[in-house]
Length: 220
Ligand code: G16
Ligand code: MG
Image (cartoon, rainbow, N blue to C red; front, side, top):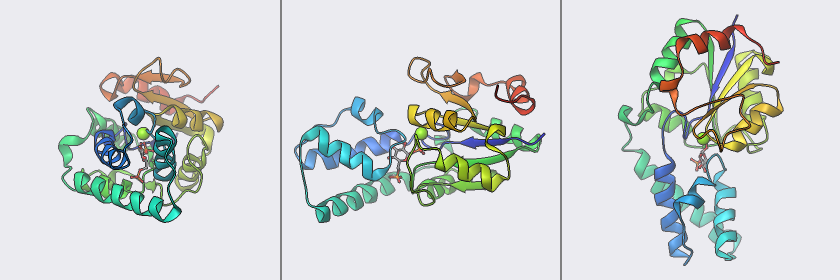
């Protein structure tokens, strides 16, 4: 049976949160707002626009629409400088192994990310060709926990949502998958991702037996 395996990007395939942190911190500090690692955690899986809105809310700062657009573009330029230096060493442990196994088992593979830079990042880490389809921040209008990104992925793979499995590191992403009855697999902390059907610290904990089980079972 062919299942649809949908992967989030940031926090699942690569860890770009550290680059988002540096760029957002620089922006926040320029406005006199402090920005911590804990706050950066809360921006995982959140769109670029919503991230800046949240930072302004935290700092109790209001700016014009023009300034908002300018800051978003400056943040992205800085972020692009960091990701331009990325290479295959930044792929999270055992991700290529799982992708290769799914490919060997002739499963369908999609990317479902909120990032508008997803394609560029996949090119840098040389994983672009591993995906049958890529859905990213340039293809969706509604952010996770809305399931739009995963529904488009399922549609493009030609698989019904209940035959899809989503790998996610954010609570909003897990909720998005659950909303449309996809199997949700949290990558990260069990306490934070407790709404997921399964949680693993990272892909090193996911064995071939578990993947085989995902291929044959349905969400109940
Ligand atoms: C990612 C990150 C978020 C980021 C968002 C938009 O989502 O987790 O922190 O704000 O993309 O990124 P960009 O500014 O590159 O468009 P995901 O869904 O891949 O985890
Ligand atoms: Mg993520």
